[in-house]
Amino acid sequence: MITKEQLIENVFKKYEDPEIHLDVWTLGLVYDIKIEGTKVDILLTFTSPFCPFGPQMVGDLKDMIKKEGAEEVEIDITFDPPWKPSDELREMLGV
Image (tube, rainbow, N blue to C red; front, side):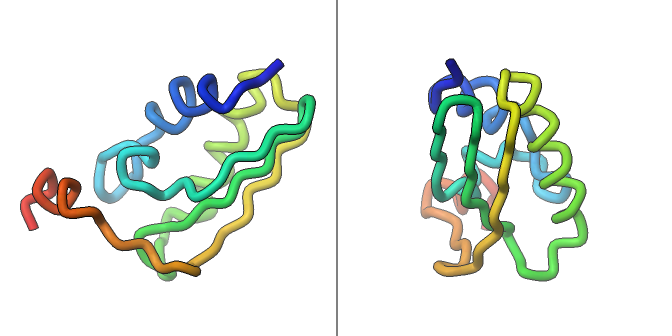
């Protein structure tokens, strides 16, 4: 059985945003994780609606989630609310 903790540790904390070079979990790009048996639904955002790596990121994440045992993976992209880095993240990024 796949767990949220497993996906957070083995997928989201290991997959880096190709532009910012920080993992998508630390960046706060993962808004929701739902698991029903071997079906995984993810609600994800990007740092920008114009992210040139968006399709690549979705494909990579789907592949990684399937390697964790998911048979069906759905990743929905939203910009509501728009991504905004936390104060801690802004400090890490030096902005």
